[in-house]
Each structure stands twice: as C-alpha cells, then as structure tokens.
Length: 408
Image 1 (tube, rainbow, N blue to C red):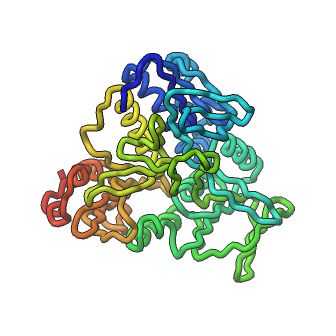
Image 2 (image 1 turned 90 degrees about the vertical axis):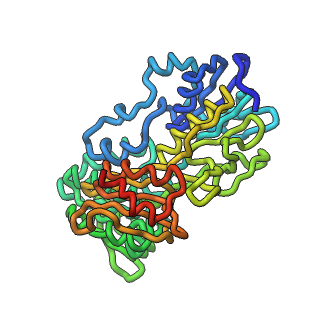
C-alpha cells in the first residue's frame, strides 16, 4: 500500500459516524489532499445511539447529536455531497456514480455506508415506522407528542434498540408493550444464560414484555393500530414501532468486483480492493480474537471509530495499530447499563464472577475451549474496564479466575 500524497483524492461514501471519523482521522494524520464526503441523508454527520435514548426520551433536541459542526466541517476542508445516494462503484477507476447522474472520481474510495433499519411490512398498514436515523426520530417524536399520558405504543422487537425505545417511552409517560418473537430478548445474541439474567429487567422497570409473539398482521384503525397474533389475540395501540434489527444496503455494489458476503469483505487492513476500503457496519473484516483470526462483521459504535483510525493511519503512514482491537458495546435500558467487551458467540460458556442477577449488578466471562472470549457486565462499568486486559492477549478462564482484575 503506497502512502497517500497531497495529489490524492479520497472519496468517502457514507456520512455517518465511520465516514466522518475517517475524514477527521485523515486530516489529523496529516493528509492534505482532496476529500469528498457523500451521504444519502441531507444532514451533516450525526451520532445515532442517542436517537433511541436521549432524543426519544425528550432529554435532547435532535440537533445535539451533531458530530460535525459548521466550523468542524470547514476545518476538514471536505467537499460535501449530502442528500444524494451512491448507485454504482467502478473499482478500477475508483469512481462513484451518484443518483442524480454525476460522477465523483477519486484515487481512493472508502465505503462507510453503515446499516439501515430492517423494514417490516403488513398489507393493511404498509411499512411500519422504525427508528434508525434523524428523520425517523423527528417523525416519531411528532407522533408521540400527540399521545395522551399512558398511551400504548407497541414496540415490535425486544432487542437492544427495542429495549432502549421502551425505556425512553416510559420516561415520556407512555406505556410501551414490547413484543418479542423469541422465548426471551437477546437470546440469539447473548445466549441462554445471560438472556435469562436480563429477562427480569423490563418488569422491574414497569414495562410489559410479551415473548413468543407471532405477529400475523398490523392494521391501521381509528386512533392508531390493531395488531393480530397467530393465536387470534389482538392488541390495540396508539402508535407502533418496528425494532427488528438492521439490514445492509450493498445492492449498489453488485458488479463492482468486490466480494460481498454479509458485508464488504476486507482484509486485516480493511482493504476490499486496491485503493478501496470498507469500514464500520458494512465491513466484514479479519479480526484477531483470543482464539485466532475470525471473519466478522460487528455493528458497534466503537468498532466504527477504531476502523476509521486504523485505516487513516495505514493509508497516511503505512503503520498498523500496535494493540489488538477489543470490540466494545453498551446499551442503556430499563434503568441499567449493559456493557460487552469482545465478540463472544451466544453458544460460549458463561461464568458469573461478580454480583448476582438478583442484585441487578453483575459481571460474567464468556469462554470457548477454556479461553476467555468476552466480558459482559450489568451496571458494573469499572469492573468491566478493569477486566479488559483479559482480552488483549489470550487468557484461559482458569487464569482469569486467578487474576480477578475486576476486584482491583
């Protein structure tokens, strides 16, 4: 990989967290050439996690989520192409075609397009509202403002976003009803044992959670919606929100020559092709875990930031990160903070090492083949961060139990 020169032009597709952070990182690392930032939303780069938390709860105005102020945008000296979609990538010429017909030709292209909310359709109601971007939260906020205190909001999906939304709705004086298709929320993400420990959180916060829900239809009715389930039961709600996960938009890359397999496949340096890279949610990358190299795609805020820093440094200096990346994720829900370090599989073994589910404060270790693969905590932020060292190099579960860094 040759280093960037002042005559190079870096085209960044995606003006979210990853896209903006890579622009900042390129400038911080000394790149003085041209940068173009392309985004399909008309808004300047903003932060998404607060949308389901501070903004939806009414604590923040959506403007407070801005990542790039006018002065920061000016300092970046980036050319902004906002409110227009990229529809084709020519890898050989590193040229991006936009929906309005123009071409943006660069010497390097960075794909940072993130993910979008997974759509949920029902014939009688059409596409249900979701919460993923700036306009979603503005529309939803307008609907919620029109509801009387105690108004029922059906939240379809009990995962991280669904739980955060339910928490915010409660803070607004509304009554969320969380509808989860699985036996319990987060079962497919955190596994049997950990999801069971978290199952009590909604009830403790006064939120109604219904599991094993099989939704067959949603219809628009007077004053809201009616939801029909496979057992014949019905639920009337004043508003409804779909929180059923995310999906990638990689169709525009078909025929580009890139390898698309649950994301844009890249190497350990985030390279998808010569002078083409992918970072953040859209990247399926080679990550060195405690058990060796894995090909993963991780939709975490911190991973997007780490990718941006890694790629900018590699393209400007040829240097790679000195320390391995340790994925980190958090979720504020039902008055508690869930934090996860590493990238464990839901089938990994789990050892509770501090606290208890009954206390509502605990820390546990995931392991596979006797090696620690992840650390999860409920409202134990200090203990979690003290334990991070267990993932910076391969550590056996026995050694971790002997070291006990979480009690330091």
